[in-house]
Length: 111
Image (cartoon, rainbow, N blue to C red; front, side):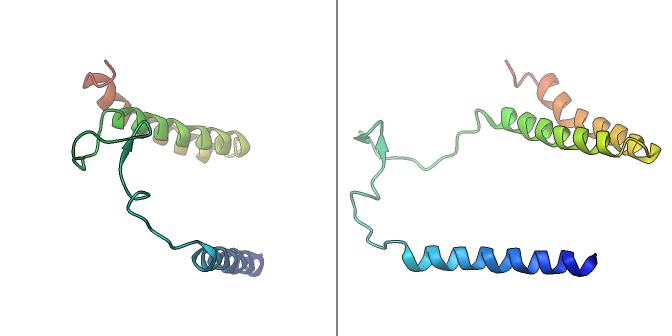
């Protein structure tokens, strides 16, 4: 069983490295100033671009990631529902999930 897992990990690692090496070897490398220019809606930018990150939707991303992981835990909980220990793990995870949700909701970030 462990041997099969190790073989699987080694094969996946080799395949990933081969794909990466192929992309490095095959990808065209012909940069051009026009290709590297910044565009807004297909037109050149009217003013110099200030490199800043907009965190307007950061809190929505936190909620999305938390709910996505929750879905995975729901599936794992339903698969292993025969063992009572899984129930306590799920309750602990649900309590930990309330921390980012309460931060976002009580902080008024969804308004």
